[in-house]
Length: 194
Image 1: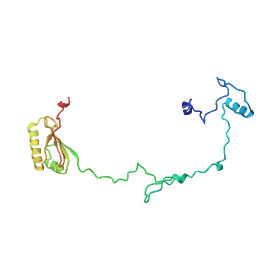
Image 2: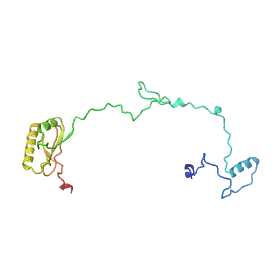
Image 3: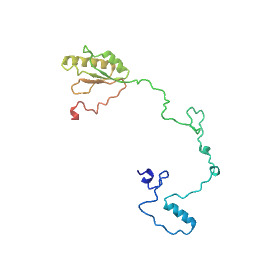
Image 4: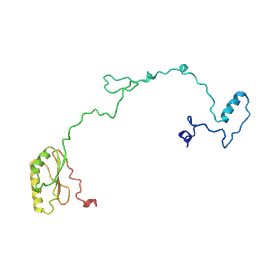
């Protein structure tokens, strides 16, 4: 199985030695001296020529600490094994935020087919946007109209408007205080999409 080294066309430093008997035989030239003879014999056997290694104590010593990053004053974080400050990006030091102050509320009629307009008015005053769904009152047209009137009176008291999200006026949106609604650019219902 070829290794990564052979993929790049380099000899594998840890790989097994190739056998001396290969399919193609190299052309052997007459060596000029004994030293060249030993070198050519080792290349014929596909062996690496022996290199003389110097002892480790004679190698120049490198100072690893010369490129060290100084620790900032008042450093509270972890330190690496080399003594450098370590910034762990996975740790979140930010304080957890509280719940959001505004929300999108979905309201449908209760079991008695009523809409809680007082609760809606409190939520709108807090800045929540409310979506009222009157679609379950399908066969009660007069009751739908009564709910729409109650919502209209409540929004007039609070000082906001009521917006219809569908063509049948059964899905109504009431924005909270300080919520801006763009009324100049909108398309209602499913028909414009088809």
